[in-house]
Length: 280
Image 1 (spheres, rainbow, N blue to C red):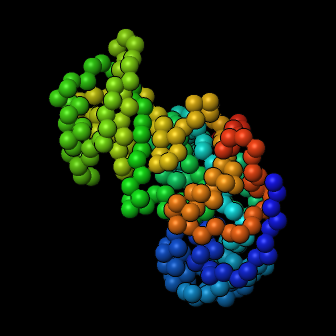
Image 2: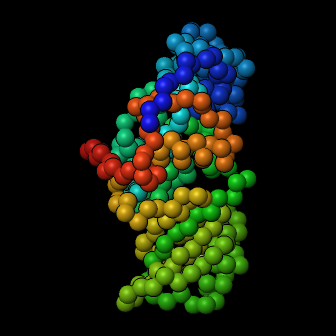
Image 3: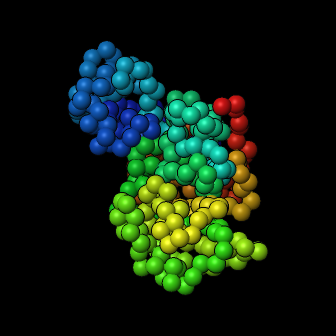
């Protein structure tokens, strides 16, 4: 089923910038107030609207705005180890953004991050507003990981991880902790928590004297890593799933969408594709 694109209407500039992937609405209002946004050569004002065809610049750079007549895109990416979740890296390491589908008139926004040596489920969307909702602490979204450690984990250490351990940025604790088997000296566990601090899972195990040898995120909120989605592959949500997600997180959905971006699929939520790879 294909949908016609509705005519674009003028929209508030801070909202346009947010849904185009530049940050939250509040952050965009602050950007405009700081005089870093212009419309048709004039410094933008807070509360100003923009029309299709207006030349909008952020920090002097021309940007493409995503008006609300287009439905956001949402993808699940199975991140392999050895990729950084950043567009700019002084060490020139491979970045996840060179592996994602190309976009015209929009850009991918990462929903949370994974460490360079952590693999698993990573979400991206073209809507900065949706990304902000999915990362906001008030939604208390669970993060679940498969963790491999070397050697046995004493019962006392496990209980400490559930009760809370002191890290340099505060107390951290797992919501759940389950055994998941293992061979030889390696042991696997499934753990979950409700925050996403930098290297939090690894640092928690280190706090009880255990080193993590492999870490994979398998769940983020309502999203579970599909078992058939291989490393480096992308799974895009269909229109029905995207609209449901927008409703659940209080983001206004357009009444029509661009047919070439997302299509209703006859079976299953989405289809996996292998991400392109470029030389770093």
